[in-house]
Length: 255
Image (cartoon, rainbow, N blue to C red; front, side, top):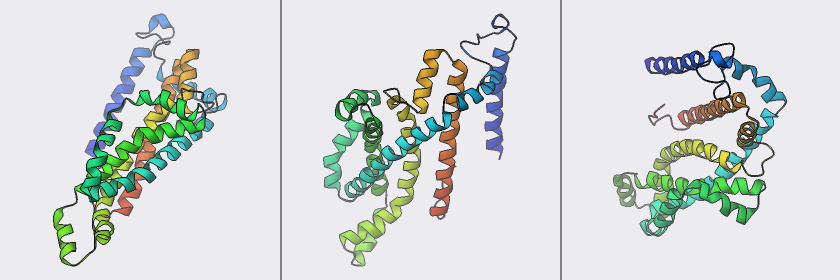
């Protein structure tokens, strides 16, 4: 509770400084120009126009759909491959260079490649998220499986378990909480990546709204969209955390 109160207090200080820096009737009376940083009241008052005139809800739905499909594909591919690589070190050694290359590749460099391969429509945005996140999903899954203590594997071998039984009933079962936890954090990464993809030929999406707000000089909408993105990311993370506590009650999880 103390930790949460300190966090809320820090946010309150930030909002107070923001209000002090932007208080005043005219731009001459303010420490920071409203063109650069609008006041909190101006940002709040701009919400109805963002919601009604610029189809905010439709953009949120479009962004979430792209992230869920792209990241879902990354999970479907990266988790099974990571389990196989974590269980058999020969496979992990063969795939490690590719995973390392994918994790260190600048994500913005994938934009031209995905446009070349998939065009500029919805497929490009989904595949951009898939290609950008699957190396991380694979690596985190390998790390979770490899971190299972050897004594569990040795005990299963002593009891006569086959290789497939060791993978299914020992390695996967013990690594699953860590795999889920890493996927929860990686979803936030995918949610950030989609903003890049939505700068290219998007009709709706939070990244599209940010770009058009910048072009029109609507700084209050830019601040408001950033706040909405942060609240969405936090809410999704809390929802996944709630499921995590129910699925793995035997594991101590950091909040």
